[in-house]
Length: 112
Image 1 (cartoon, rainbow, N blue to C red):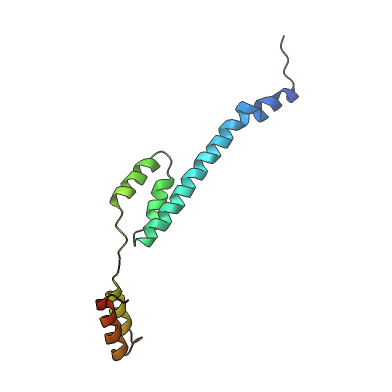
Image 2: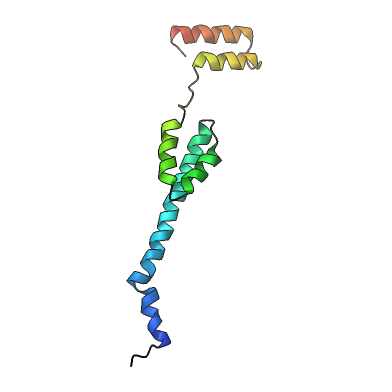
């Protein structure tokens, strides 16, 4: 007859096979959370809904699919020319007319 003692449970839980799946599962979730955070920051910087994309990426079973969809769908970062920035500064009243015209001429000559 086999008798089981309460102390026999220790190696089953703390042994290699008992803790490894728990550690693997926590690592798996940590990877998805890090990816979701990076997607959130990237989407927000591009003017997209970062929270939505982060939540979709965090779902582990379909996260990879949504990550691929996000990478295909995301917009390019809008680049602004130096002249458009100068125009905005002039429109806000940060520059006088003379400063604006001088800087605009400098940009056209390539000294900006």
